[in-house]
Image (cartoon, rainbow over all chains, first blue to last red; front, side, top):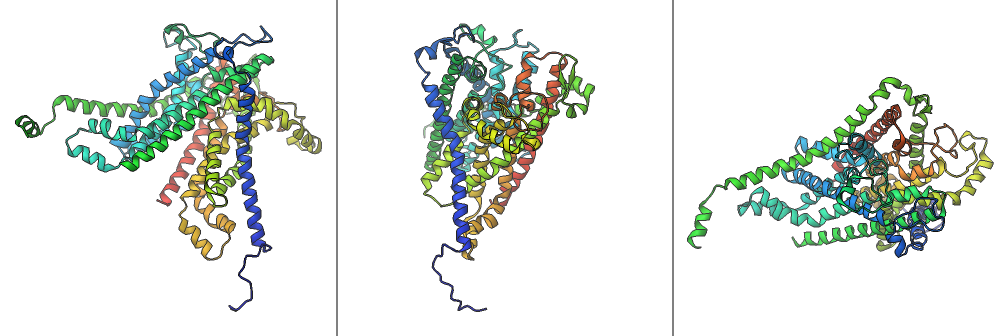
Amino acid sequence: MNYNSHKPLTYNPSLTRNIWNKALTIISALFAIISVLPLILVISYVLIKGGSYINFDTLILEPEPPGDDLLSAGGIGPAITGTFIMASIASIISIPVGVGGGIYLAEYSKSGKFAKFIRFGSNVLAGVPSIIAGVFIYAIIVSTKILFGSMFSGIAGGISLSILMLPTIIKTTDEALKLVPNDMRRAAFGVGASKFTMITNITLPAAFSSISTGVLLALARAAGETAPLIFTALFSRYYITSFDDLFYEMGSLSVLIYNFALEPYEAQNQLAWAASFILVVVLLTLNILSRWIGSLGAFSKNKV
Amino acid sequence: MDKATTSKFLLRRRPTSDKLVDIGFKNFVVAMASMVAVVLFSIFAVIYYESTESISRYGLRFLFSSAWNPVTDEYGAFTAIYGTLFTSIASLLIAIPLGVGTAIFITENIIPEYIRNTIGIMVELLAAIPSVVLGLWAVFIMEPFIRPFLNIIYEVFGFIPFFSTQPLGAGMMPAILILVVMILPIITSVSKDSLKQVPSKLRQAAYGIGASRWTTIFKVIIPAAISGITGGVLLALGRAMGETMAVTMIIGNSNNFSWSIFAPSYTISSMLANQFGEADGSQVSSLMYAALILMILTLLVNVFAQLIVKKLSLKYQ
């Protein structure tokens, strides 16, 4: 071979490989721009179009039935409280189950057969389509009237949302606890702590910020879900006034958007945009908040 | 140390109450962990039980018939199954190059890191937007915007069966596009994570023997990360098959089978969302049968995805 070839060593932009390199770089940049575009478009439409319909009345009034009044569709007040109530019910159910399950996986059986199966199961559960959760709750709670004879209810809606929150919470708890250094566990046992004391006083507090990140993400997902609610909680135009109202149909922001977007009336459509404004602002805030809390956790881990 | 403290340390045995709390807590967390299995199995059992009537009446014929007639009690889910598979696979074909391309762009050092991180966060925030809001946007903004372009395609390529009906609003094509928006964040973030896991030694070795950036990406980085990317793609496929709200709002909800992607169609999940509320009798059972099919499809895809992702994590750790 001739090592004295006279090819210049300087960068030559007209070489085929360099042209290809440039072209592919530009294409990948284009793809990145296309991927970001939907977010910018959706957010700006929701914020501008939805934000323009937001006023005090919209936030507190009850929605009017479609077609009654062509100029005003009332407000989204009951839907806001309904979403809040059902998300709370879902959290009350799924946080103990999810955190408890995560504790079992990380602290009691790291690589046992049962733990492997549960990890696999929670991944599978995470992949179950949300509408299936609705169908399931419809079959076991709504159609059997098992909840004191009530059919469609806010509680049934909350339970179906909790099925969607569960896998995320289990997974993040499991992973957060695994990141806690084993030295801390040994130190706790060394001073005579029982396993219960060790978990509740040492490892859970150390993993607290990561776990709350997971809980907030799960909550954000549940609050935006519609499919599990359309035949479990249905929809209601009224505020709840007493505890008993939990056992009746309950409105939510997401179902309000779904119902009113498909109405032929302008006023109802505007209400749907206003509801998406509230929903998107709340969900993005929850997401950004959870990222921020997660980053705090990384800091406290360094301190440990 | 005073005497009382010393005597405390002499007590080697834990009080019974302590032990009870300890054992009780362990049983509690075991029970909580078992809930996952209980919920998963009961979802299957309940949906199977509710659909037995239809399964015994129609058998496999249900999968290949597109009749849906509550009056004569004749049901078949072919249109919905075809719609589910077609929309999800078509959206995947569009989303894979976009998502993987974006992931490459934000893992390479082409532009400063803070811009790349911002792009990464923005794509992930897209996943935070609820599907019903995306549906609202698709109905009022996206679909009117793309209709003229679809009309041009219809006029030029109308002789091809896939483009043979005039786009008049809701239909399969807008549903595919909104699905692309929904699964893009999954493909991007999973691909990004697996591309980042590729050891930098591999890249340096490729650069060292004179490979250009994109030769390295295509011949070294992507092959090394391919199992993670495939896992992410399969997760996205599962999500696309189960996606309900946005699709229901934009697909047109028609059980008439058509080859054209501009015609209104159905997916299993949109059929459930549309009809479940008002269904009774054997229609409920048929819808449950469709739900069972959807459940099995997503389950297969998800289990497969998990097996592939597991392979990756064994590779570079």
